[in-house]
Image (cartoon, rainbow, N blue to C red; front, side, top):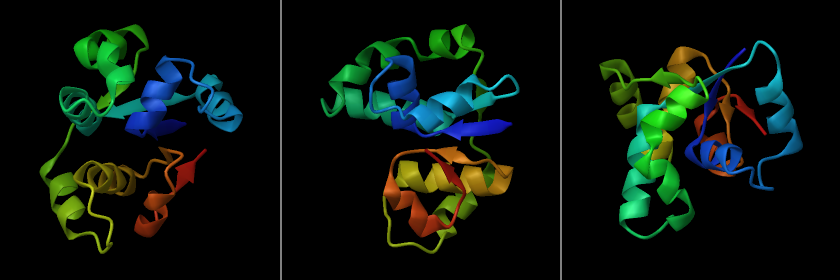
Length: 128
């Protein structure tokens, strides 16, 4: 099963953070699990580290490509259709990173692994 990781889920998975749920860990450890990481996560993590809002993600921000390769994550680039839908999705949730992840999950028909309840506003499938 292909699963799109939210930026926090990605960081928590890589750092073995206790906030990464047992259900999420079981899903990523399944034999057929393919973990997808969006280009928007690289942008969000680097941006928040730069602003001093996510210091614990600094090691990942500095070695994002290495982590992608090391864990065999499937990169998910941002397409024009993703961008169009992210801008057009009806929701009061304004975070551009979340809007892009929701659009990608919808278009690519992927469940989004996230602990963030804000994604309910987009009506997409989530795992946690």
